[in-house]
Image 1 (cartoon, rainbow, N blue to C red):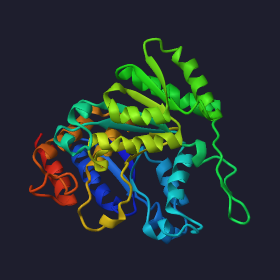
Image 2: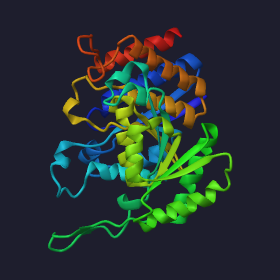
Image 3: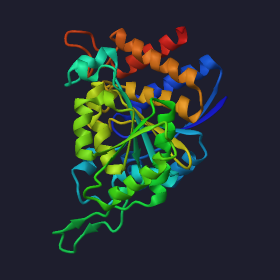
Image 4: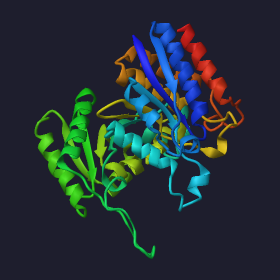
Length: 357
């Protein structure tokens, strides 16, 4: 198979972790006889410096003509510390989601035997947890208009808006995934307060009737946040709106034991994007200490969801698991007193393991 990939390293540790994911992608293509064609393009703060735009037209055009996008991270302290910056790196991420029609973010939350002790939660609570968060990406407070501040700057406002069509397509997706898993959907909202949440609940009830085999439950977001910590094994597929999903999926990182282990896929109308959830981590940029495993696992999701190549994806996941068993990990997840490895060393070990199996 011929694979056309747009590679967007982005800011901070993005280039370092994407390099390792790209090396793993090359190794998989070589092993399974695929032809890899890719092109690198700027996004985020580095794109602002180069072009003045956080998501240049040339980058968008590359994404549109590619089969998949392998993405690193966006964000820079020079913008984080300047609330009055007229252009921000994060605007590039929002623009990419909107222009590519990326309405669904898929984040699997699973545990790794070698990392259970790293979680602040008790082992018996999290051991065996395996659920999927499906977050709506292009609506809600992050995109609602009007948005802004009063003339004197003393009042700020955001608008939360959702249409029936936006809700239907993401909830339908959640039920489709549940049918392939353990047949349970949890819809998270705040329907006791918000009109948009009441529309989410109404649409979900209608779609649930089409899937009698699937168990459906509704949770207010505050209750869901508590349940995720107390009984994470009670979930199978969670579906929710943009802001709630943003918060809950990061909360889910404590179940895995490290934010550096969580991959994600953003899918929708055009090209899908595969990225780690950990952000740009600028303090570690250039030090070769960032954990590349979430990005490598995102490449596994790319093989499975963008190209339908599950055997290739499973081999990557096995390689990651074996690297952890062998203790070939970066300092953030290494046990005290054990050796630690640099970003490139972890990537090289995984590439070598793939070559032998």
